Amino acid sequence: MASDVFNLSEFLPYRLAVLSERISKRISLVYGEKYGLSLPEWRVIVHLSRCHRVSVREIHNCVNLEKPRVSRAVSRLEAAGLVVKEAGAEDHRLVEISLTKAGWKVLDGIVPEALAVEARLLGRLSEAEQETLVALMERLHGELDEDPKAVPRSRMDLAQVET
Image (cartoon, rainbow, N blue to C red; front, top):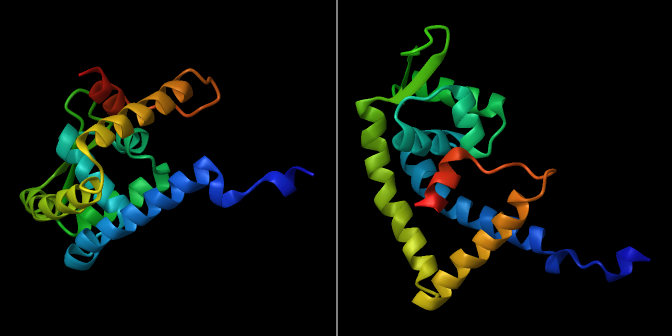
């Protein structure tokens, strides 16, 4: 029986998901407790800091969240004065979202602490191990990039790989 040989705690997707969730929850203490932001709100803010003005659809494609969660996050961020919605520069039917000065200020308060958490985690690895980790993750992405049934990487993530 297959279930006799399957051990969830050794299954790579499960192990990666658990690690990712633990890291996300640790970093959420920075933006959640101090600024009252949810994970979707944090991801939207960070994405807007990279792209400046984008549509909800573009955010949805880049932050690994369902479109309704992105829309709700944008609405909450707008109500808090952290983002603003404006008619698209090229297509006035599209709504583009961008950070306000208050949004940039919140981001500036969060990023140093989030980077400190990342540095503490990576500090457990040697420089060679960190490089190996990145290379291994990229190889796994590469395998998924070749799989027509896998969700494609976002433009932003692909652009980062190409540089």
